[in-house]
Amino acid sequence: MIKNKFILISGAAGFLGRNLCYLFSKYDYNLICLDNNNLKLKILKNKLKNKKNKKYYFSVDITDEKNVIKIYEKLRKNNCIIDIIINNAANNLPVKKTKSPKLMNIDSWKRDLDVGLLGAYILTKTFSESMRANKSGSIINIGSDLSILSPNHEIYKSRHKSYLKPISYSVIKHGLSGMNKYFATLYAKDKIISNMISPGPIDYKIPSYLRKKLISNTPMKKLCSIEEVFKAILFFCDTNNRHITGQNIIIDGGKSLI
Ligand SMILES: NC(=O)c1ccc[n+]([C@@H]2O[C@H](COP(=O)([O-])OP(=O)(O)OC[C@H]3O[C@@H](n4cnc5c(N)ncnc54)[C@H](O)[C@@H]3O)[C@@H](O)[C@H]2O)c1
Image 1 (cartoon, protein in one colour):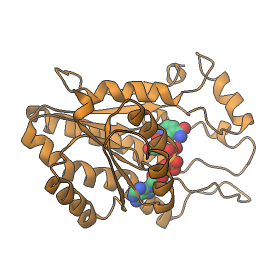
Image 2 (cartoon, rainbow, N blue to C red; image 1 turned 90 degrees about the vertical axis):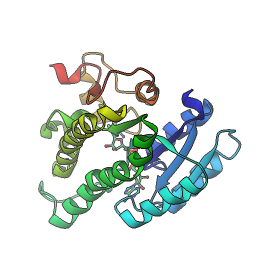
Image 3 (cartoon, rainbow, N blue to C red; image 1 turned 45 degrees about the horizontal axis):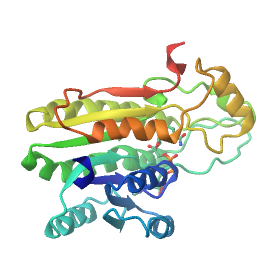
Image 4 (cartoon, helix red, strand yellow; image 1 turned 120 degrees about the vertical axis):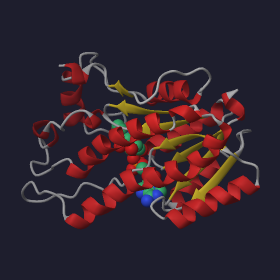
């Protein structure tokens, strides 16, 4: 039964994370919620307070290995063993207007890669230990259609002529795809699967000029929904007899095919 298992999710208080937490809670799945935004984590805790599933909340920077290990030890003492890791956190900074398109500065590159790649590595390395001992587990990496494609620079810059999708985003998602395959083969003998779920843009608060352009470039003429992402994640939460590992499931309505 997946429901008795514990699902750890990083970036739990962000847009996708909190929506996944609502859906997991609705269906009584147990959760470990990690985020470095204490305020947003408190809001999540408050929203989920009447749900019956077991929940633990940790305000932590996932790039800080010592603190991640402390959480792992604390959970172990409480007999709470993680069965599923969802690497979801991202350092998404608000878009700044500039006069001309600008490649990002080195500090931003480093911080983005630290959260998206190093953070995912630290969580996987730490929490897969008990999965290996149990000979069962699932690692789910949240990618994006930009894990296999380049951003279409023309589409992104149409309103703010100077906007460039940060290069770090492409580098992280392509890197995560490599990490996904690495852990899939490394831990296959331990009956741990590792897969990537790669949504196209999720239909929420996308500026209308961009939404229109994205939809017109999508064969199914709609954007990705949270429920669609949730269903794909649930599939990989069930590790029973799974023979699918190292895969990258693209949820983009066919956009990457044309
Ligand atoms: N929103 C979309 O349309 C979309 C589409 C495809 C893929 N994705 C992917 O989904 C994931 C979540 O995206 P989102 O839109 O919810 O972003 P978001 O910015 O709303 O959420 C990211 C969360 O990660 C947290 N975080 C950042 N740095 C952290 C750190 N060092 N330690 C712990 N937590 C940290 C933030 O506080 C935030 O709550 C990302 O990996 C993103 O690439 C999103």
